[in-house]
Length: 119
Image (cartoon, rainbow, N blue to C red; front, top):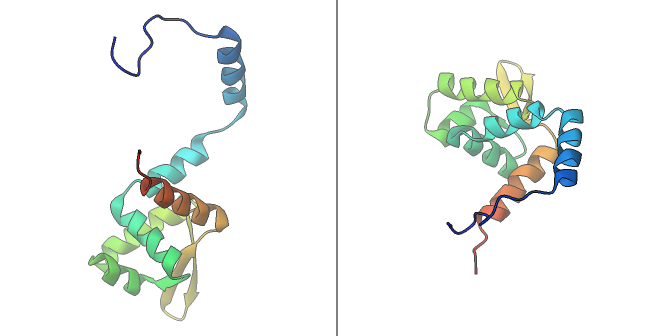
């Protein structure tokens, strides 16, 4: 058999049933939406930028991404709808920030994990 696979098919029915029961009680869709929003390189760059600077306007973010304001706005709208970002208007400008500490922790944890090596 291949490495990482079982040589025989055997499972713990009690554990499987407990996990399935718990999964039926939890709505995983909000988590899926957040991870899907963060799975795009430009959207992740936006979030990382907002981790470094608490708040940035659309024009700042467009320049950071080397993208148009329209493209950047599309990404920001997606992240806002996924409840990853909040924004405020000041005059004619919109300033974005990460929604809360949970999102900041997700990004920091992923960055830390991604930097780990398998020794």
